[in-house]
Image (cartoon, rainbow, N blue to C red; front, top):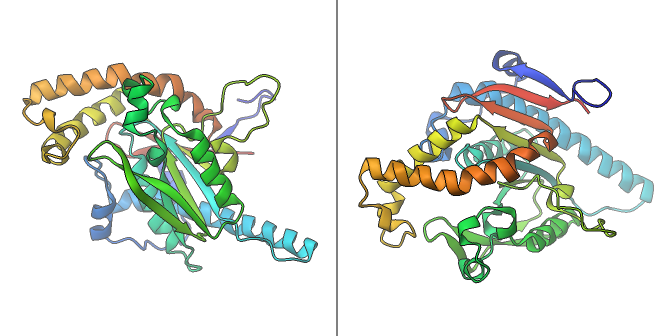
Length: 314
């Protein structure tokens, strides 16, 4: 409830939300879905049809409405306004499934009849390099707000929203757990950009008399938070850690290669310790408090499937 006693969100169970798909066709094949899923994040085509097709329909309608407003302003000014992308911010905990959801939305939105160009950026690329984090004593707080180059991320988003024809972002490697020197992602005149990250909905602390500087969430046209009970997310994190130990961690170049020799029991203990000392704290202190700022909340159950959707009314 808000201060006026009105509900801040409309709540939908899975069945009610699925009906809002209307006649939107499913354009995703089973083989494509398998390629979009992250480690230990199984998703069915039924889940796509029930949850993400209605969401893509909502977003498509909102994108069209926003583009109409830009055209109205251009008509009023009597001049062509720069092409400005619609920016979607997607937040949530480590291991909650943000990356899989972002990739699925990217594909679905790009297959609407007007075939918009949809790009996806993760804020991992705006983490400070490990050398910087080590110098600042922040390696144990990687993923916390202070571990990001927020100024660089804000500059990137400002360039996007100014209509720049080409915008560049740094590249992060999960294999080496660091920024890749000299590599960049180049985005050229997209219609939609999805920005996925842990803390993208966070606002800065009060800065005294001058609080006018923009922050990351100021540039978003629509915001999504992926939610789940912490006990479930912790279990998913542990399961993902175990799966990666048999996959990516086995690469000698992996930052986590030293975990390969652990037994299953030891690996569970290590993953649980990492969660308790880093990821769980970040979730409770920094990520979960931003949930109420999202315009749409996807609430997951223990099996990773979305059980409820909450949509902000205003």
